[in-house]
Length: 424
Ligand code: ATP
Ligand code: MG
Image (cartoon, rainbow, N blue to C red):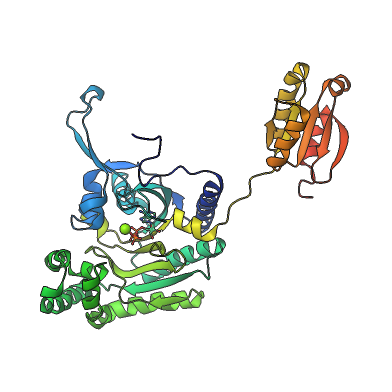
């Protein structure tokens, strides 16, 4: 540790950043609740298997981005050391929790979660090693209407954040199992013809997971990908009908979207709908919210076959883009002058807080200094309690917007600083 800096890719969140991020989480909780979503808070670390299995060894996350560690705490009573990983994303943990708690009795389940996630990536603007997500999962509905619902929810949130015209919804379908198998074959045929031009990584993906090649960030790969066959050509009729219902539903509620045939998700359990809300205003970190359908995931984790669809939004990116912050409440600055006033001031402060006011007690310095601090804090009122006031059981209330001042009896103070709070 050279300087006292936060670790690379992590940051302290305060001031405007904190307010903007809070605004995102608050809006998310409100919107998700209005769609019937309930909170599910899973642990921040899980057994490594929980992420390894569903995300797959070849995924970026599992192959290089996870913060995994062995906990060997015999002193604490562990028999065997445990392989643990800090949450890199929410879906796997939510599905693990769904299975652990036997929630298949209560389908469909709608879960909202939020909090930090951890990935060892190269830090950049909008890309951190500890970042924060809002996350929604809808389990137990195989019908395309569910896809519309959960995208509608994302769209409503984005609009509440004032982002409706800053993002574009990219939408694609990966089809059902059969269509995907067909597409996989078509891709293997095509990429095998261009094998010598592919990157090492993609040559490996050709065997393990050819769809991932479509997602490659390698320049050379991208040129070959540009002419690769399209998913839509491999789709069977059922998959087409499913996708059409999704599109019709989105059109009906006025969600604009762009069919983006290059949008894929690598793992086998992904199917049908995949989507990303993308902005051009954040450079390379343009995806602010992304999701899709994962009908095979819960079964693959060892649970009962249960369809699922969900999305995750990056709170930092959403906050950067929206720059909407909840305004902090304008405080009342309470200024007891002299020792005799101190005790009474405690009581008055609590009275005002009970009435709903935000109260800061400022006990140091002369009146001028305190008034300066009150202005800096954007206080609405300064409440002065000096010896004279104390004798007469009143306080002097300065309205800092109007520059006026009045004497208010102790018993009327709480009402005076909370009534008609809206006027400037
Ligand atoms: P990217 O292509 O930008 O790496 P991703 O496909 O890895 O994104 P997801 O796993 O789909 O991202 O996560 C959902 C959202 O979480 C992203 O759209 C983004 O807004 C946010 N996100 C992902 N990784 C980071 C990160 N390292 N720092 C900040 N936000 C992130
Ligand atoms: Mg990533």
